[in-house]
Amino acid sequence: MAVSLQSLLKNPETIHSFSGEDMPDDQLLRDCVHCGMCLPTCPTYRMTGQEASSPRGRLWLMKSVMDGRLDLLDPEFDEQMYQCLNCRACEAVCPSGVQYGPLVEASRAQLEEHRPRPLMQRIGRKVGMEWPFGDVRRFRALVSTLRFYQKSGMAAFARKTGILRLLRLETLEAMLPPIQEKALVSGAESWTPGTVEGNVHLFNGCIMSTVFAGTNRAAGRVLAHNGCSCDVPEGQQCCGALQIHSGMMDEARRLARINIESFEQSGTDPIIVTAAGCGAALKEYGHLLKDDPAFHDRAEAFSHRVRDVSEFLASRPVQPPRNTEAVTVTYQEPCHLAHAQRITEQPRELLRKVPGLKLVEMRESSLCCGSAGIYNVIRREMADDLGDRKAENVIATKADQVVTANPGCAMQLRTSLKRNGSSMPVRHIVDVLDQAYGGAKAAKSGAWAIDRERAKHP
Image (cartoon, rainbow, N blue to C red; front, side, top):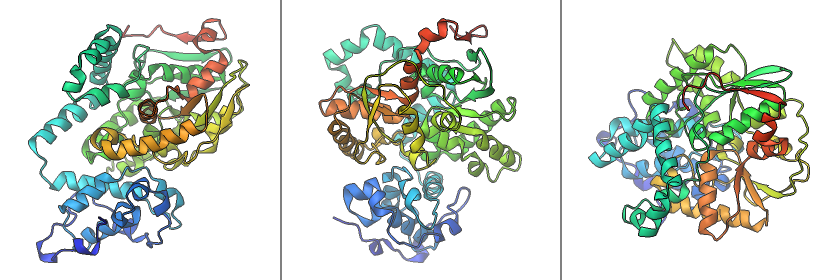
């Protein structure tokens, strides 16, 4: 049954309003003119048909809390702030330029600050979020354990015996792709072409440096093939995107300061990102640290250097790949690349440069696949519905492969396709480009060198 927004209004004398740090900006809220152009682009509105589940409806709820007409701790307000995927599709079509992302993130921060969470939820956030993502060394150790689990035969044993089903980990385990390579340790590897035309620095991230370490190495090779000397600065941590989306703003700011300091030593060279979600978060460090006088200007300078790998490559002459890829692919647009960063044509432009590759468009290519950080873990029903919708559109293209540019999307697509009876491979765009350039084999042939002398972790 549809929720009546008017029915949520309470007596002003009995409510809790926004207060303290990380309050939604009142002026940003007033930018919304409630025109409704955002409704058709919103995944949750498309799935539910409820006004409260639309950007316009959620902004109305935020404004009601701001004006003291709705209780901050109202269960429906909580539900709508976290039902939102924060895909930012509404921002891309808004004629008033409403900055929806910062508003919903601030609202979640207010909920985390003012509402008491049950004990088990607090433990879950500590174990599942703060511990692994708070230090990339811990995350690397966790993924190394998972890699051993996959390669030792334990994974097959756990599936066959039903242990995963008993522990309710079957879906989570199915999302994890094969971890083929050892983690890429910051400061341990660099890629240098024979003729250096410029310097760039790779943002390593947490999931990309471990689960998708091969993709980050592929990015280094592709950049080197196009004249860029690329290294991976030491000291960097998780980008903080998952923490921002979960209302953990203090932790996100801590990670942001570490990353800013890690990259300041590299001057003003471009910072290259292979994960759409990380790129969007890094480009908004200025907003995240707007109230920090010691870091605000430094954060703005950092963010101006950040480039998605496809954005950077498409901005310069690209060396034509020599290897033919006789394959048909379709492109799934990550929300935080298409909507938050407004990067849509560049990945397609790069794919069209691969000899023999045919690109076919899918329906609703920019509609959220349901990954949205950890959304597909904590809100499986909506995430699965969106994943199934995306899988149907992918399968309908009859492509051989689906290409994307974000690790969460890759894992969600892989799981959704499998659930819908398809074994279609899911690839990152730089993996496609790297193979067209000859991959790791070409790197060893002497076209350009890989410096491994500083490796500290075998």
